[in-house]
Figure 1 (cartoon, rainbow, N blue to C red):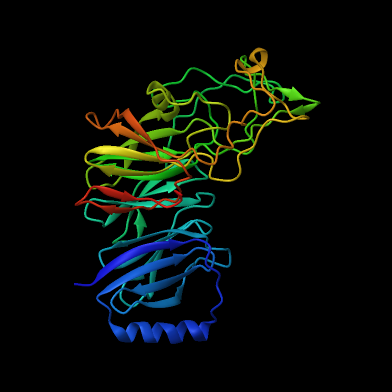
Figure 2: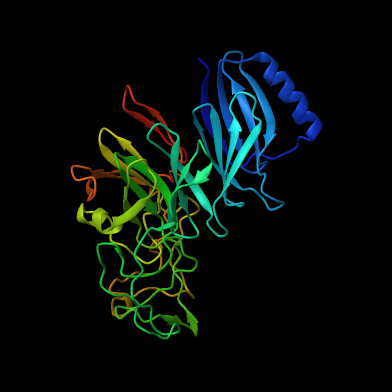
Length: 378
């Protein structure tokens, strides 16, 4: 039985020409390996392969991106039923390749501005869900027929916000069951996981910039300029969908404020921009595990002269010169663990402070020993 594995290498540089791709490809194909680790090179926009049996590496075996001249930005790779499937974020496509020959087979074009991030297999692997980072949506697709099966479904129900002056007030209404924040700021849908007929989608709520506001949600000004948060993530949320029989469609049934769940367990209180950044999801022992990247690394910053420093009067919280600026901690990664006794209403039961910036949308799982391997943790 031929076995395939997946690895991602986002920063690989593309230095092979068409002739060298063909030479490596013929050499690779002639070996007929029974086990292969496929590598998706995000920067090079190619496949590479590693054969454990003789420790051979074959670089840039196939080009990725067959939907025009724009950059493909391949970001996710999955194996299912004899095929490899790539998510091309820049071209808004899902591409299919033969896992034995690496021949390009077909494409599902999603829509302009979807910015797909992750692919989640459903059922026997012939269907899948796709998360749309830019459009705040999910969609279900048929990988056997290479076609869309569902509508584009929003990750939240838009709030009916009051009229406002964008230079003065940041609008918000009371949260609802399907709008956990009471806002229409972008959700930036990223991670996906499925549990029976329920689909979960994590929303990192990336926004650049995040403006600082006072207790009345008026925008704060400092030296004539809008005060901007150091972090780029609002309160992360989890969208819950019920999928119809056969995975033909999905309906939003809830949006859960993950920040509130985290704080209910004694977690750090939210400060604008310093969100959890829940990038990816996995199910382990009937629990939903949410990998929260936090600040995405970088150097921790501290308040100094000539910058706005929050006060009790303005923001209800006070900082001083030399204090760490919220949203710059480079060691704030956590895993939020959700109980699935009621799959449609998951609730946080604990969290693990793992540090670092666990990132990416894939993980390696040792199911026998219940071990999860993550990238981005020092």
